[in-house]
Length: 222
Image (tube, rainbow, N blue to C red; front, side):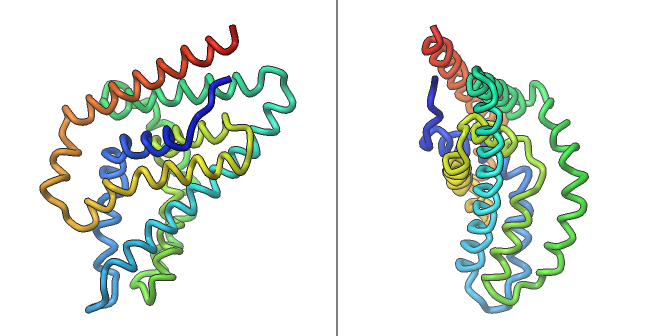
């Protein structure tokens, strides 16, 4: 069996950060207006991302646990989940390159739950303390996102709740650079990250990585 390393999860989060800017960058940038006047932005920005990554980790733990149930109930269950995760990685590559938006269907499906959760975040604005920003980030961590769903398929394939949570924690750390750049207004960096050619290069790297995982998986089976 192949192993999805935490470093790999981090790199996928790093590569998918360009997508995060489109989905969450505006949110991360706009929430600064909810910070108390005269307060330092750094603690609130850090707290927001702590909450967001915490939500990812919990979701990873849940999917990892579900994966363990499936893999333990079927002899080839773990291999099936790993094939599924590779498929999601390929879909993510196509999604980021704008060649195929199949993952948007999952985002729409998650929209039903999101419409019930999102209003909770509005009740936390304006922020009274960084602690409130942790809760705000936690809520926005459940925003329907094809990138997150792809990463969650890795947690599912781990077949273990703890590993699933650690995968998503590593993935969340990988998304930080792009979102932090967006939040602090790094205008010199954002155009580069959002450029079509940059997205194509990242999509190609994800595709190559998916092919590597595919050969590793079937090589281990044979």
